[in-house]
Image (cartoon, rainbow, N blue to C red; front, side, top):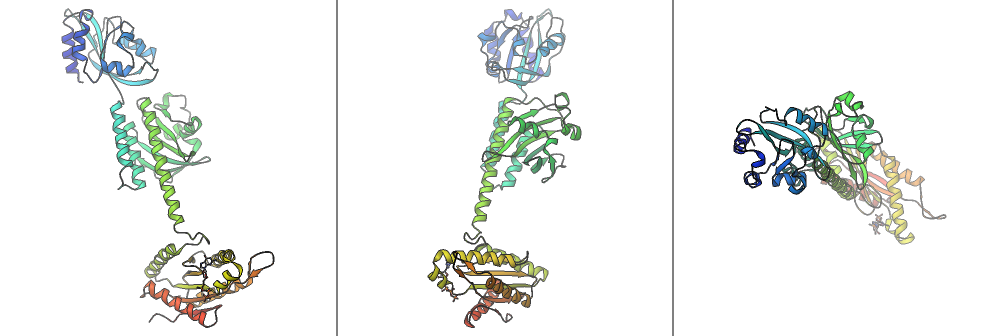
Length: 472
Ligand SMILES: Nc1nc2c(ncn2[C@@H]2O[C@H](COP(=O)(O)OP(=O)(O)OP(=O)(O)O)[C@@H](O)[C@H]2O)c(=O)[nH]1
């Protein structure tokens, strides 16, 4: 609504005294307006409101007509102030826009952008006042943000990180703020997990003391907390204000599976319009959306990790072992690093199962895995690729060191028999084939050479390490 239109209306209305303007005529002019229209007489008693005003303030015409408009102000001082400056018999104020906090019938306070105008009779006397009001952040804007949130969460082409970033940006644009953070909080440690900073300064993984952030209030209250003008609030001594001069903040706890994970929060160095009920609802919805996305991501990661671990021995399984072997061979090729593979097979394992039972065989596999992964270097890699078949990858090792390693494993196994019960022990022996990676060969060829050497060890009587001849 621009001033020109209001002036036109004013001239239409100013043709007669407000008291004389029939409610029907006002209705005809303003009924279908999307903005709330209120008309008051010179005593500031309400004489007209349109449908949009009834909806905005939650009162019916019957409840308000004849009442002083003070009932609609959140702050009595604003009512008096407006009376002194604008809405009085001597007023010559032109039509202009201003922002005021209003109170709805249910007590909720909202910021209204108001276009106020003075109505004059044909002889120039003030006959009443007209206000056109719309909420600073309208329901339409909240709906728009909701629609955007839905679009982002349902977009299958977006990754987790892209979704989080888009949602933080939606929040920033909606609230008119500068910095958005999804934080992870452990004790007093506040870590920026994801962020969007229109100033380009804040980066993920930055850490703060929780006490030094406004989020400490959010966690204390355990609900959404907003400060629209910290410098004029009770928390102006907060370290976050002293250190960063952040004037505005809105933040909500972020829960994962019912437990506190961190916060979702938006801040700015400038004050903003007071946050309204819709903003608090939107924050809760955003936080719930983050919580859902986080839960989904962590569950997927856990499932993915589980799918790569051998359930019995907790070693990487066949799939993970081959993936890792591909990576290590790729590195070895790029950096001309030596790499040796040991193909290891437990000896006479069938007879262990047959003699002591499958559970004893399982226990033997678990203990073998513990011993094998315990004696390697940090960079070495051990995986289970089949029933009693394992692979060891030694980075930077030549064939002698790999053979030495195989024998060290044999000797360690000999020194640590598997305890089946208080009386019975079994000693595990292994047959191993060692092959050194030749930069020109394929993984299949490397493994085939190591396997062949291992079968050789079996044929030679087991419990030994055999070296594969170099690739042809
Ligand atoms: N307990 C247990 N046994 C397994 C598992 N996976 C495979 N096995 C058994 O391992 C045995 C392997 O037997 P074979 O392949 O004949 O080899 P072996 O008895 O070790 O004899 P050599 O390899 O020739 O020394 C089979 O009896 C399998 O059932 C497992 O997860 N747990």
